[in-house]
Amino acid sequence: MLVVDDETSSLDSFELALRSFGLKQIILCTNGKQARELLTTRPVDAVLLDLVMPGTSGEDLLAWAGDEFPKLPIIVVTGIDTVESAVNCIKAGAFDYLVKPIEENQLHVSLGRALELSSLRQENLKLKSCFMREDLEHPEAFQDFLTNSKSLFKVFRYLEAVAFSNHPILVTGETGVGKELVAKAIHKLTNPKAPFAAVNLAGLDEHLFSDTLCGHKKGAFTGAATSRQGLIEKAGQGILFLDEIGDLSPAMQIKLLRMLQEREYMPLGSDVAKPMEAMIITATHRNLEELKDQGKFREDLFYRLSTYHVHIPPLRQRPEDLVLLTEHFIEKAAYSLNRPAPRLDSKLKSLLASYSFPGNVRELKALIHNAMAKTKAGQSPFGSLKKRIAAQEHEQQGRPGFTSRPAQTVLLPDPLPTLEEMNTILVQEAMNRCQGKQVAAARMLGISQPALSKRLKKMSTDL
Image (tube, rainbow, N blue to C red):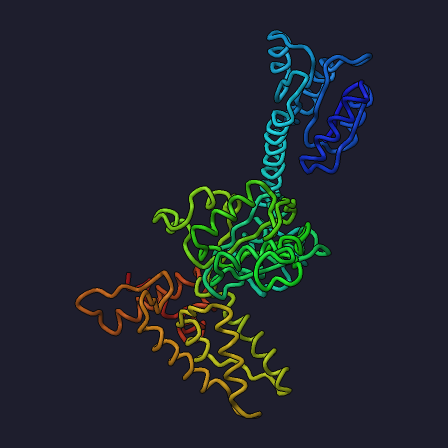
């Protein structure tokens, strides 16, 4: 933030006000010439500019900045209370025109709007540059993800663009897809040395919610023998990750909304508010938009939380990751059991590809580790693994809303097709799911790639 005024008393007043708003990087400048030099050498988000100054006047500086930095928000602060002056400044590119003496709230609102506009412009530029790139700028932040999925790499590039914003980020996806890993990746992108605090909100009542996030003072309630920090304070200027945000009660939603709006919180038993400096990341496996439409989740809180929204696709929609992850978990399990890692057979690959994995990566990991642990060294774990998957599939079928196949479900006509027709349907479905990649489709069907190629040629000839 650059403040330009020839009166040192005004500069001191502005600095005091800006620091009370939470701004820390403030540059004070007493003349237009110095301001021009600073603007050309240092990045600035917004400017507070007095009009009447010796040498280069505020009007001259405004005209120059309007040409050189047309997207820089400049707020004119002056004692000149005339319509003509205000109109001239707005025409020259001023973002706002405030007449001294300025009320603190008036300055706060104007400055907040200017900084928000500046932030959005910078984020838009970064988003454009990120989506123009195919590679990641900070691949090390995503090293905990083992993936070849193009859809996940799009998510990573988006996160690189928005991670440095002060706005909340909402992460959605089914259970087990790695939503907390996403939050930790954002932490690595922003400030890995800062704290990372996480809590699962599911099952918390209103009191425990307030105590967990805000902490309490000694004697705040029965049993509060000592003061305790809440997670907001522990997170400091780092990351506060709130998992299962969709499970909040209406009363807890109101409390969270107030904290996000005011950027402050109050420990239980205290009447003094404290600033909330942490970046907020929320996650849920539920459909928040549906909950909003049903009146179960506050609309204003939904829009505040979902300024930036990333959705992690389920494992069944990432067939390119299935074998990669399976082999990785087999190697990890074998290492922990001090035995050689067995090789995947084609039948197991086909079985894995046909299973819906409602628990996603977490379920796959558990299945592999269980199968490896229950077999002796030298024995193949895949027999028990196949039985376990079949049992899981059978168990899931009895649950409401179960879908045994991915979203691209094969619908069979009535009457049923012949076996030859069914072969054609399966080949087409496998090619669709594998986006035309014959090796992956052949693996899914349990046949060799040359055999699949032969079938495709025959289908083409029959047409």
